[in-house]
Image 1 (cartoon, rainbow, N blue to C red):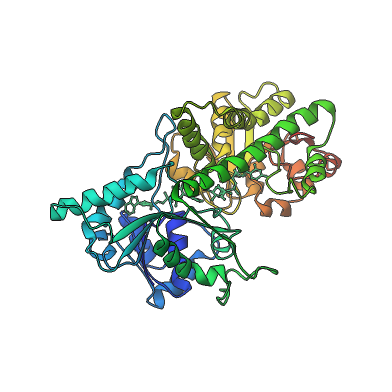
Image 2: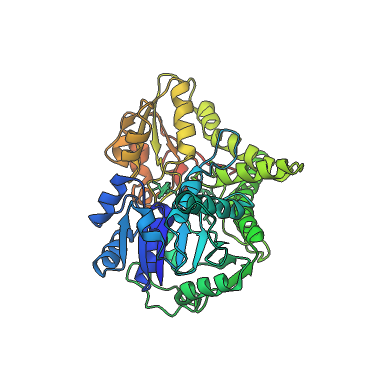
Length: 458
Ligand SMILES: NC(=O)C1=CN([C@@H]2O[C@H](COP(=O)(O)OP(=O)(O)OC[C@H]3O[C@@H](n4cnc5c(N)ncnc54)[C@H](O)[C@@H]3O)[C@@H](O)[C@H]2O)C=CC1
Ligand SMILES: O=C(O)[C@H]1O[C@H](OP(=O)(O)OP(=O)(O)OC[C@H]2O[C@@H](n3ccc(=O)[nH]c3=O)[C@H](O)[C@@H]2O)[C@H](O)[C@@H](O)[C@@H]1O
């Protein structure tokens, strides 16, 4: 099938590369010349395991290309994905300006043949499919002075649930695919597009072997509004699950319970499920915060006070600073001390710093007058580039970050940190203080190694 994808970011690039690898003919449409140049050199603009080899293969086989000239390519696509960013405006509402630009370009390039399904894959506020329709019509009208025939196209919703760091795996083996459309032909076309994934009939690529037991993928076919709501509800639920774990962690440490044991104890109940119950410094990333804010705004627009959504966000805001409180308890004063921070990416497996809890922690440490020495296996370049205002020292390795430091704060649980013996950490830190923001280490082992160790909720 001929497919266009607006936006070669985390979602668009991965979706495009995977669909091309599955045999479709995909054109990525991107406004950033820098990204276009990199992708043409078969290099990925983002760090995502396995993506570069997937990109190279799809490009070499002639099934994936990239352009900035939307209008000349979109007209011939049977499916057009909109996967541009929808960042938050200051009041929390989603900024749809990039979606609008994409929809206008689709309208300008439309010529009625083939009939087109325009798919909102970006996370967009409830009702945005209607807006996309209007913008597509505006784009067509600009060129032709009249509206396009409603027979020529329809707008569908197909939210994305991939996680950064495991994006290719999540795209090939999703827990479900959600399709929201008002027209049966659009659903049929999208089912056809996704058939290899739905039926798991493709040969798994070397980057991402098929896990045992995955033989098919459920599809949820629904209306557009429900589909748009499913995306917000999924992220809100996941964020709430983490904030719940953090709230119980805060109570646990007051009463002497161990949050890791408590969450294991509840997670084995199949009605609850053990995933997304890791207490720590809270959730970050490009989507949970912005999507919680956008859903809150939508609820309030309709006169509903979403108390759980507010509470989830409040718990998360405070949770980020808990490690600072722990540090202040162990090290008085913090001013003038050297603090090592391990991990700046919002989670392991990515170089993404968007709304990373580590940044809140670093800002607070600097505000308190500490000297901060940071290490991250992948994200330091992004930190240098995106936050030149943060006056931190950049370490060459995790061990190097510890040299001369009074205390270590672990903000992101990169698996490679486990390779460094606790005894080495104890040797290198002047005061042996470790504040473990992700409950990464075993407290007993850390204390035996001579560390003054504090985790979260234990
Ligand atoms: N990052 C993630 O893990 C997930 C993101 N989402 C949603 O997907 C959407 C995209 O997110 P990301 O991929 O993270 O964003 P991103 O910022 O990584 O990528 C967006 C891309 O769109 C490009 N762009 C902007 N305007 C354009 C236009 N008019 N034409 C062509 N390209 C244009 C930008 O240059 C950028 O490369 C958002 O709505 C997000 O909420 C959904 C699930 C997962
Ligand atoms: O809409 C999106 O953008 C995506 O948001 C999340 O994916 P992602 O942000 O890539 O990362 P997660 O693995 O969900 O982690 C989010 C944050 O929660 C934190 N987290 C996660 C799990 C946990 O138990 N505890 C916890 O604090 C992580 O450290 C991270 O900061 C969702 O998991 C995806 O399904 C969704 O598509």
